[in-house]
Length: 433
Ligand code: AMP
Image 1 (cartoon, rainbow, N blue to C red):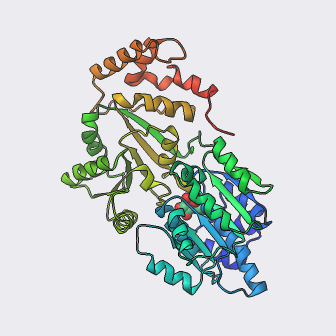
Image 2 (cartoon, protein in one colour; image 1 turned 60 degrees about the vertical axis):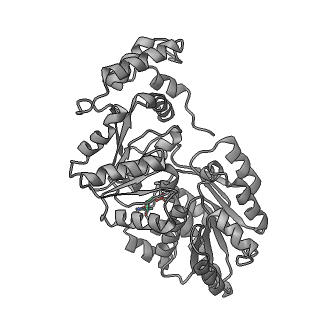
Image 3 (cartoon, rainbow, N blue to C red; image 1 turned 135 degrees about the horizontal axis):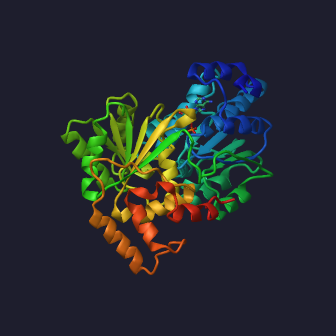
């Protein structure tokens, strides 16, 4: 299958060639024909699958063809709602890349920066608007944005939008969009709330599902490092001695933690910057572009700030701290190994994080291979303490009923996967349908 087989117009095919895309990804192969037939779409796909192009390409094509027929003026005809500024900017970059020979105008709006450049651009007229919900509502209330000519609406990363508390804003926006429209709805997970939201805004949608959230891309090599919390800093420094690690995105749970890792790395001469919610939008953008052009080798991010960060050829993701929400692990490591490239995801796990690790194993239905023989192994006391705590909890949820097996497994020997959580994970697959 090539892009030529998808009945795309020449200006788009030319742009894709410049981008170096030769074959559509599975979500593109499935979604583009559906969208080109003006049908609603419910897409279950995580980031890294090529979903942005899956909606951007057909939107550009439909609007371009409409433009040829109707010679319409620049009113907003497509609206893409997305949870974070970084994601909005990246979607904007996709529209710029794929639409560069079409003359269509797009604009990205988000909060945290002056609204003036955005309102000036709105006054000049745009065809495609990419927006985060808060700033959009704000500019709608100020009457800079009018949605009455929208004919295509995209909800991107709907699950994250819900997690971040945007659901009311999203509903308010949708209420202002004409009912007669084509709606495309993308979410990495499909819990009930998301399903219900989808039901209220989609009409007879076609469903496309590419990578269930519980699975991790096969192209990503994963490894687990059991380590004491106090040794994480040294372990990170040790790993980064490897010159093969050209770029690494390091995740921490907190903003404070991110800043601390930056300081530690800078102190030993490794270029590092942090990206998180306490940084100004400009600082975040600067850190991101320094990382993209490899001025900075290591970018340290919290989950919300990193959502949707799209870095071509990112080789390594390092989980300095494991996330307490298992789905986040899948999102994080999905930053690497994009569009078929190989990626490596290394995760640190200290004593307190073993519970998080169990949830992750359950979700991905497999055990992350344990890296043995690194210079900072978890102390035997920590393993023992954890084991005893588990035993005190009265068998502590070991579904195989063998506390001993689990305790031993914490050390380095659970690669074989007989320690309970892997097995129960398979039957308790949390994929939501
Ligand atoms: P997304 O899932 O939309 O975040 O896209 C993930 C990455 O894959 C981005 O860096 C895209 O530029 C890239 N990409 C998307 N579609 C293709 C394709 N058909 N061939 C090669 N790379 C692609």
